[in-house]
Length: 461
Image (tube, rainbow, N blue to C red; front, side):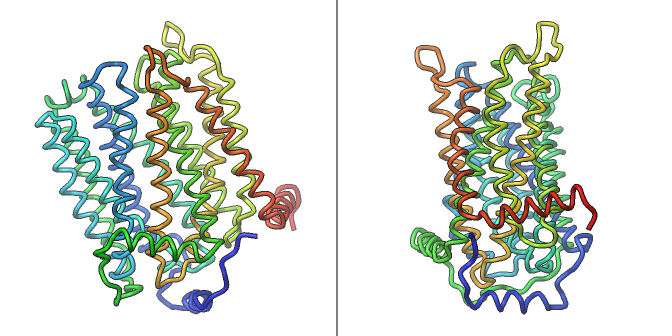
């Protein structure tokens, strides 16, 4: 069974639950402040990413669009790998509230720089700003996730992660839609320069709103005020990974999280090509498919929080993994045109949306228990390091997914090596061994959860 190795931090965590400042309600001001800060930040990150990708497509030839997609995602993900050690240091050494607030101030500056890059009209400069946004998000991540168990009691952690997951995917939908909308020539002009002020209002406005929301987060004590800055970042990253690996349960969960987000990045990048190969002609038709996926993730995140029953419930994992495999296979079976010549949606398009929603629900059921376990079982004095090490693995996998997508979709003699449908097939095949491993690793938790779900669904006890 996946479980944390018994250590002194267990008693510290239980004692911490009796601290009077910890909240017992998800509607507390401090948690709502964190929730809105996360929502606005995730929205802005996706607006910038898809705005730059959309504008980048105008600078390249049609057969290089997949390169722009992979490059834009890679620029955002790479900082999570390079800044893993400093991110963990900041979250442990200083108050997580202070780290969150200063990250939001940095976001305002970065978004103003993004507007400047658009006006200059240099595609590489725009991607550099995307990398800066990724750097800010990388430093923000451990402080954000690490603050949840410090502001809420243990029984609320799973529900809190479910709400974070829900708002994040809503932010992805809104951000992708806004970014794609702002990147169109009829909205902001050629290369986004004619009506640049529209992009400025959205990017800088969301950043300022996120900073205001961050001020609502309660004051939190530094977890390890004596920690020194990791000047040897490579060495500190290795030490963080060793701290993570010292607990087999946390390591397995971190690897599970890495697998999930690697698969998620591949599917996210693939939707654009899937829609294009299906005959879509407008970006809104692509956004609807992406929206179906992330709406499903939101529903799955909420279900995972509700089904956890006030505790960290790993028995949900097999249900999520099985769904990931099944609905990836079903997406591979979607054939024919998604949109007919009259721009009317076909049955294939409706089926694709339905499968993407169900794939998203499975994703939420898979990811939320992993995130809750990682936060709940990490020792407080090393929580920032552990979350940073987990982020390193996660975003390393996502970077590999971006590179792998580019290689698979790179034209050879004018033809891509693998179709978008076949990529969904690969995702399903990759999930099968993970599903089998989980079932054999935690059979008791799986059976217990399924029994609980059946009794609470069909009977009133």
